[in-house]
Length: 295
Image 1: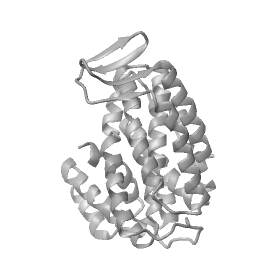
Image 2: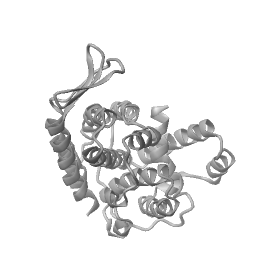
Image 3: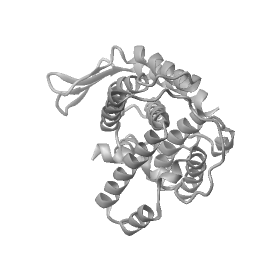
Image 4: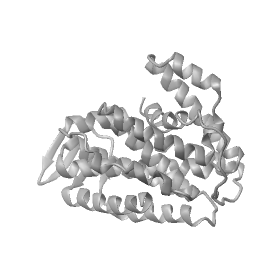
């Protein structure tokens, strides 16, 4: 369910853009045509990232358990949406607004959710993503609105249709940048909340991001590109690597303990270990990176 949950977070916001009209002309990312082997590799890496990133529902449960309350100030201001004119910025912030949309939704803030939905629709229209959808998909969504499993299946199918559409148009890097933007925003929100509500569960979730970070770097590294936007994101992700270097992630049990200021999750072989200093350093760097994307 984790994989489908994250796809729901990304593809769901893109589905909201399906009612858009004509696509305005704008700049595009320059990417060298992919070979078949590179495409297969990217698909595997993307699926690995989806698997390791928690779904919005899982994150919401962790935030609420940590005692976190809705905090509008940590989200990207909706007023910024019109300032994103480059394709790379639009792709990154589509992912960012998608994560913010999930955050507002799980806290049942309907008014804010509508604003972030509008932002997501606007960016998706500018990127041309909305043309990948048709009336049949929307009708299926509406018909299964109250059937969670069916809805997630439809959204999952739609995401891969969008992915295929972007590949056909040699724009699959947009999909990767959306994932990167959403991942950075998710890590930003989790780390900001953890600085105030420091719980073992939140610390574990932050520690676990070492895995998708490596997958993201590997994914974006597959793009032979001269585009500065893609190169810049790759550099940002690589800058986070040293901060996760001494964070341990394993597959231990379910016990959670505190040992000298270090959260240890697992049984005799710890599943994850991260210090207060590491959390703070990751939060600070993620904030700096995220600010370059939203401003």
